[in-house]
Amino acid sequence: MSKLTVGCIVLGRLETNCYFLHREGEYEAIVVDPAQNGDKVFLKLREKGLSVKAVLLTHGHFDHLLGVNEMKELSTVEFGGLTVYAGAAEEALLSDPELNHSARIGKSYTVKPDVLVKDGDVIEVGSMKCKVIATPGHSVGSVCYYFEEDDVLISGDTLFFESVGRTDFPTGDAGALRVSVEEKLFALKDEIKVYPGHGDFTTIGHEKQYNPFFSSVKA
Image (cartoon, rainbow, N blue to C red; front, side):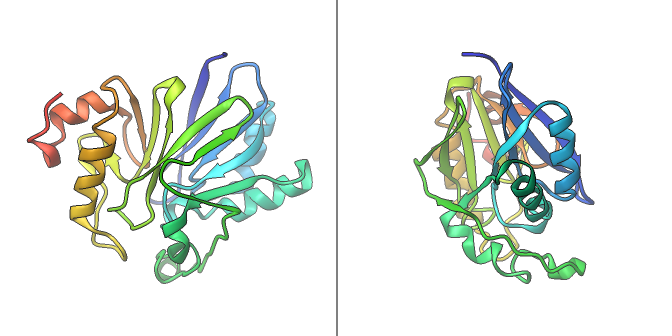
């Protein structure tokens, strides 16, 4: 199987990491959390010879989804559409501009996912495969996407480089976040590469050793 390539485009006022994934030599691509300018991201990937087949949302806050609908519209014209995935428990945030905070920036925005996923579901796009890990805490429907064959975890705003996502927004829960990270993410192999929603990349082993929010956990 060819190597999984993970590219990153930083988008929006909150500098969200929008990821695009594809296997070398293959044209199918996955985009994670298109924060804005979905049409420009789509066209940039097309210039690279890639066709966006799926959008994976880690959660429903505005700074991770303002490009979804534009990307889907352009995909429908160009290639017959793409599939949008999101956590089943996140449907309320995605459908409510007040809850997802897009109304607060003067751009009420909603997204209707094509597929609502739950913990343990597997998503396949071309030869890429990822497992859904439900990680409530930053929001009730936050999920991570684990590409087990490639030692890659897309963590959204659940786990950052030596930090975690805030929990003071609607449906956030600090206790749930701690459980999600300690019991689910830290159960993964230390060498797993972690690609967060903001900031630098990291590994599970590094966070177990150095993340101050989990000082009792050691690699």
